[in-house]
Length: 214
Image (cartoon, rainbow, N blue to C red; front, top):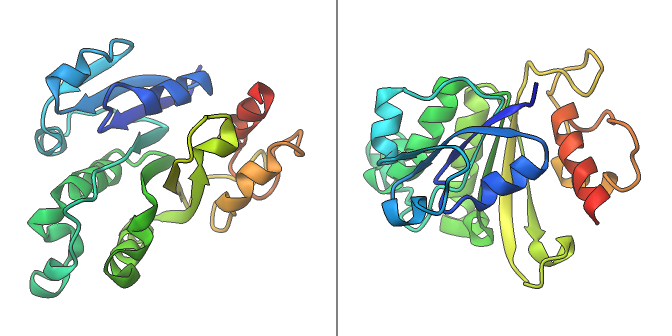
C-alpha cells in the first residue's frame, strides 16, 4: 500500500506531482482558485477556502501533509496583543494549515515557503512557526534548497520545513524521531544505499528516488 498525502494550497499540483513520483498517493488536495484547480485532475480536489476545510474537519487521516501557505501577510503584532501568532487575522492561512496538521496528525508534514521567511521580523515569525509545531509533538527541521541543484534550469531558492512526529520510529529501528538532521538528507541520499539513522524511512525513500532520477 502506498503512503498517503494531503496537499494544501495545491495550486495546479506541482507539489503533488513530486510526491506522486516519489511513490505517494495524493488522496485529497485543497485549492481556493477554481480556475487553477481545473488543471489539477489527478485526485480529489476540494475547491474551497482553507478556512472552511479546516473548520469542517472533513479531511481523512494521511501519512503526510504538504503545502505552502502564502506568507505575505505574516505579522507578529497579534502575538503581543492577542497572545498568539496564529490568532492574528493576518496569519490566517498559516493558522488553517497548522490547524489541519494538528487535527489530522500526519506522521510527517512538509511546508515550503520563500527563503526570506526565516528573516521576517528579525526571525521572530520563523521561530514562532517552529515553536507552534514543536508544541503539538513534532520534531522540526528546515533547510533552504535551490531548484538548480536538482536539474531545474532556474535559480530558485525555497525554504522547506519538515516535521516528524516525535513518536515515529526512525528507519527500520526502534528509535524515535526525536533528533534527526533534515539538512543532511539530500547530501546523504547519493551515498546511502539503505535508510540511515539520521532520517525517517519515508524521507529516505523520497531521497533515494530523487537520486535514481539524477
